[in-house]
Length: 329
Image (cartoon, rainbow, N blue to C red; front, top):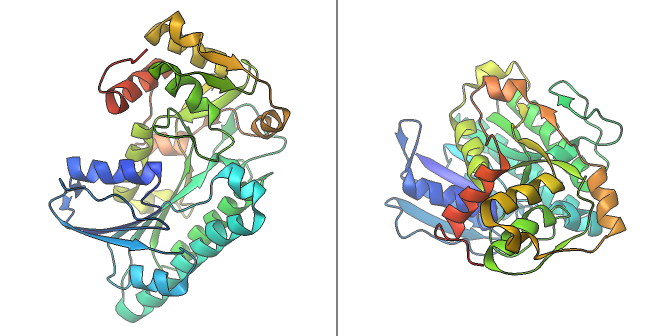
């Protein structure tokens, strides 16, 4: 099986690729080839036994995209994106990558499909940012899309494209709306949601973290482990069960910042909590308050997608995966 990953140098891309080294198969099909694409060279895995190919370039460049799909990969994970805060600040860049890049990929697949009768599985990483405005505390699966940010609009358009290209049979698509990922490893990115990770990640290694919103701020979160599980499960899903709607809200935890901090205290103690410094930021607070706080993802759960049951589990997973199992206070 040949797998293509766009955005392979990003955090979720790296985690997904690492999972292929540990579990080199999709369902019962061995993974024999990886094509890893991003604007910077993705990291290769010496432990992966199959062939690996690295491609660097602009996701919206027609030449780059056609080169990626020409070998006709079996599964395409489309993760390449400009994240929420950056897409809001840089309007042109957000639309170039998140919309033009997505459409360029889908079109390249369509053109190759008509020549070769090739129908790959496409797993599209969408976002809960497709919801916005006046929504209920718990959003049902059939709630309408009303994005209030450029990033949300770009992802919502991507979902519609995925649905239409799948309906026409150009590929077999599954769209997963990723919750906010916490705890993200490594350095902070440009996402407005970054503090949901930093208030846990930094204290666990004895560093100060800035909290820009109130403890009552509620959000929908899951771990990198669960996100990788979503992607892998989407690659094996029987899409006939999607009933013409390939876009799914994923399960996660609806949790407040205060509950995150309480979980940190249970796992790492008061010393870790004292490293959180509250510095209110009205701009970030305004963005975050416009995001979804909870979902009722019945469709995804019925289809076998799973997530953590407590935030303590998420913190412990981060300690195991990123800190060698030890808190470094």
